[in-house]
Length: 499
Image: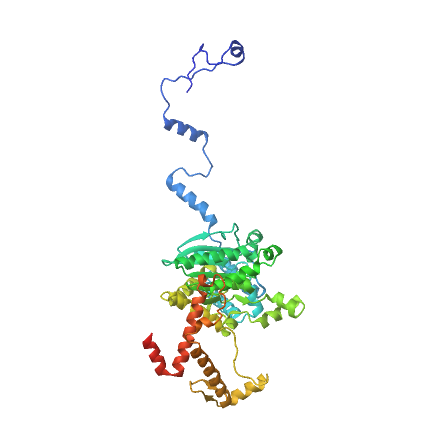
């Protein structure tokens, strides 16, 4: 404290300043004031809110009463989106709550009647969701209250750290990437992220990624491949963003690059469709060893509205297009596009998200166990074989392009077998197959020791880096071993001994 006595001059003090500025005085006290007296005086002068507690126990009860106002809601909010086929279920739940409230107010015990009504409501909900049409399942998949990618990651992981950036100066909020652990096992999580309201959807671009989003995803896929982290992707997008800026930045190139590079990764990839998976925007992070889909999710090559506009020239035919596209989970399992259906709680994941998280977690862990002890080459071949088996097709010899009659004849034919054991519809077809195989074998014998005579194609840069060439070579070697074992078991044994 500055101690200035009466009559003492300070720097800069003049006669004029003495006449204009009053001189400060010093407050002198004989002894210091105790701190407890000062605090007591301040408390008396500022008593605080009238409901503030006076002791610790009352303070704890007062704080609990305040925090109890922010607990989980017990009743469904009126602003929650309700689908048309869910309105009877919502009305029945509302009636049950009214009956329970009236019984509590009047002190009447109606527990048996309420239990019967709840059982009936549960049965009605089960019957309603067991026979949903494709259009209704599409509505459920697009429900704004369905759990998003971040909701699932934060509820199934023990720890999670989100990562950003594509190493080119850009980031895309529509793609979420990060490292997390489940039961002590680290995973790389990548997924589409939608918003809950208009503001969040604008920031996340309604879950439609830009090219930098897919480059960001590929950056962290390579990171996972380098450090041996299994990859888990969550698909929930209506499609890649088709704006002018996205096309200028190379949207198609970014998707195609991801499709090529994902087949060369040496770590297992598990993909889960949690909402709607649309077009190449979903496939760009969905080239996985196992493709899972939630019970009420959808997966399509084009949205029903776009399909209706193209084929029927009207968006009003979206319902007809939805049924024709076969986009629901049971249809996708039937055609082997998806490998497993992840069940949802009764009423859908949007009605009870907390109960849906354990189903997703268990499905991921069960499928990961298959690949835990696989080598990188085995994981690559498993992914390659999965996509080679997609679709339904038949391969046979057709004369003159009349495939319908040829198919009918093959169904009625008893068939014959070649020397190697291959089935053929007729002897002529069997001889043709043997001639083709013999020609291939003669060519291989002639080229032994003359490999330098061939004009080898130039290898594109990047193939060796991603491991695709190794996978292709291993596939060719496997095919040759099968042909050798089928043609002559003794030769196959001799080759095995020589190796």
